[in-house]
Amino acid sequence: MAEAGEIQTNETEVLIVGAGPVGLALAIELGLRGINVTIVELRSRTGAQPRAKTTNVRTMQHMRRWGLAEKLRAAAPLPYDYPTDIVFSTTLYGRTLAVIENAFAGRKCRDPRFPEPAQWVPQYTVEKVLHERIGALPSVRLMSGNSLEDASQSVEGVMATVRDLDSGRRRTVRAHYLVGADGAKSRVREVIGARMTGEHAFALNYNLILRIPELDRTPPARRAIMYWLINRESPGVLSPLDCNGEWAFITRLAPGVTAISDDEAVRRVHAAIGRPFRVGIVARDYWAAHRLIADRYRERRIFLAGDACHLHPPFGGYGMNLGIADGVDLGWKLAAALRGWGGDELLASYEDERRPVHLRTIAEAVENYRTLSDQLLKDDLDAEDAAGERARAAVAKEIVATKTREFDTLGVVLGSRYDGSPIVVDDGSTPPAEHYANFEPSAHPGCLAPHAWLADGSSLYDHFGLGFTLLLLDNTAAALAREIETAASDAGVPLQLLDLRGTGLEALYAAPLALIRPDQFVAWRGADADAADLIRTISGNAHIRSAPQDLAAINDRHNQGLGRVAS
Image (cartoon, rainbow, N blue to C red):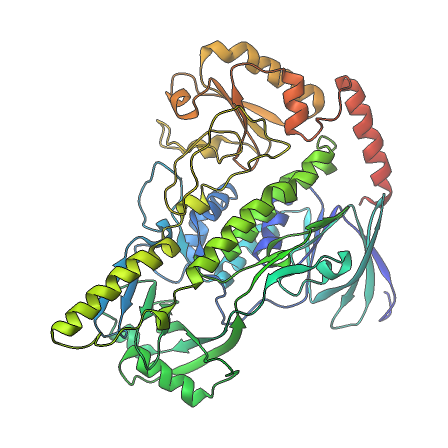
């Protein structure tokens, strides 16, 4: 056995720093494809703070792919039928000013546009479910209580130094690739010298996790996942975390104030509720909102994902979900590179595709942050006279005008696309106009594949594979479909044919053939193509114009070179 401080060596294909939702999502994508993964995580990641509370419809699609959608819903502390509404009122028991229903598309109903509604669930529950999933993947290893100290890279791979916090023992981890999913204070970002640019610390906020049993025994008149409380004494947001009296409360601190006492915190909670219930403080957290993005996401074999490369205010429920999408995008691309069929353009496309989506989403979150509870205040909101009626009507109108986009987000969540991606084949059509709420399903290349429920009750998405899926929608394209299958096989690109002739989906996809990427985005659609060129483009090998056997030889040499650091 090695002594404390002695250096041991481990080998893996992908080293992930950070075992939050982003790192776990990436590990699942890689583990499902048999890639050897090691995750190092500094903290235990347990605690009362829920962090994110919205798992949006796009992330729930991934949960469904991973076999976790129903497990997550069963693990969620709130009941399945709990309404996903947002109530705006003077206090928790005060006058209702406005209600936004079906926030984040969380209503439990069958929707033609997507297979899974959103789920209101604390991030610690999401992480628990994801942890259980990686535990069932034999190629994934989690090293908790370890920190990344340093890393270097060469043409052959990455050499990382990892330290066990309990024993002080250091070990060298050799990997093909390193991914920093290690959050806002990313050590991996420091290693590659990337810088966060933008605006820091808009304001200081105070987050409380509370035990208020009386709220379970005497609940508000209308159940909701958020109560925006608009009053002069204690404007803020109260949210139930379960049905046993555990709540989260967020309030802003005045400029220049950096802390408040527990007595002051309880006073604010009483003022927000409108009644002096017994309040127990479970956890406290100060945080500031930022608008930041890394100047680059990659240095050769080292990548950044999630909060390590983008930060924004937590308004709109985007943060965790945006990071999970990073893990999904990067996961299948790293697997392709490691298995020899993914070319240089495939890994380069990670930043090409994700950065515009990050910028758009950050802008939405900042817009949502412009109007908070204390900015909706008006005189006479509790008045019983005509002045009170006018004040309440005015603030209700303002709420609808300024806050709807925070909770009606499908246009961002499902409508963001990969325009101009080097691994997407543009067909010259016009994509739908971008809108924060209005989501128009489109098979325009670079868009999320339009969803449909099939005659047997299954989701179309249920039939997509871990590789590419070629949708055959019309008899006229059968011969070309066979050519594309052959070209993919010759190049070693995983592709399955899904025969949907006679289902009527050709109208939805506006083409007889559509090629769907492993992440459910449309890579190409049409009725005519050079099959070999198409496969080279979507696999990131567009610069290679050699015969298939030459491409295979190149991949063989690539793998032999990496073999010196492979496990």
